[in-house]
Image 1 (cartoon, rainbow, N blue to C red):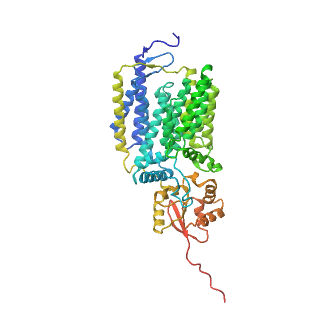
Image 2: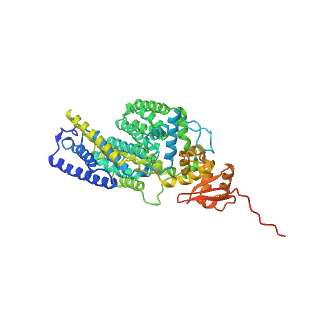
Image 3: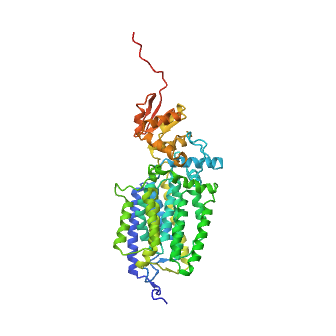
Length: 556
């Protein structure tokens, strides 16, 4: 028998007791923080959830350990601790749900979902703008839009917040579960906390959040197969099909099959490499076919890649901008930490994993929307090599059958406690959408004037769509095209007054609706033939001055 494998022994009581004290103290601190962030949350609900989570961690007190792991995990309860951590993360984001309601893309995403439910069909042409009316356009996030539409009620954003928080909680649970062979769940939770802080800027009630747990499960499955030096499970194809219907980001999953498969091939035994390569190639083709299992078929893949052809426009859209290091950020800290580990720890990575790590870093540096992908996937890329070098590979012990019953009961109690917290806190009027992108009073005035062709900013365009008013522009940059959106930015930012005048005349604009801080709003005050009709703290309205021009009397 290999000398690295030893017989299981019982964990010392003093070690178990000290671990219980640490875990309980950490959970009680979390409970105190939860009460401060959820002021109307009933204390007994938090206590129930906290005690159940403490039980799941303390269930490790009597377990077997080996020389390769100081804190092994129980086989039966392996999924309970990630589930508990996911519940904690869910409740936390439920408490700060307003941060998810600050992007007007949420508005038109829900509107499209409502249209799909009402017509029982999918859009193939634009029906929401007057500048691109009738042009070909498909909704690659149709399933997410339907889900958001199902939970949305007018003036009640609780459903959207709950759905998004659930997606984040499930993502956290999957993350901890995937790291379990190499890292104790409590430590994985500590690692997860700064990663979520790094990603929170892009945590919005939008389709990409519903696709996030699917992305993590799919790529995590690929990496797990590479760690085993085998081909991925065919069940991952179901995740790819689901991902393709939820969000266009599935293209990244297709791209990652190549480098992760290369890692598996290089790590395999020399005699097995051809067979492993063939299975990975077959899986890649099957995944490509699975990504087309949508109502749009092949057009889903073409539509998802269309936005990447927008050229320099991507550097003007905030979530597609490159990373900004003008001020210190968690992402910058993560990069510096990786560099420090590389220089000081003596840990090494196979060249294939270095290639993966460089690719994820490049993606995050190029577009800030990829920072959460970098945050969640980087630990999975480095976990196995680092764990092997540090001797942290964890062993799984056999447990009695009755522990499954206890685990199921604890999971049920966590679900009930989470549901009670949700019902008591996420009330219909708890959350409010960001005000500066929903100028209700100004739009009410324009409706009374029967304005039809309104020049507005893209964020306000999303709000106009929800009011059944066709927009000049909104968040669908792939529909409007690079040059049109570049002209729009030149106009609203005051870079080119002639461009503003040309757009006003070309599209026969009869009113403008702009945020008060936009340079174009101040320019409109001085344009001949236009007058200010309304202004408040959010928006200013200008309309054409149709009054006859009063000429001075002729001199005698």
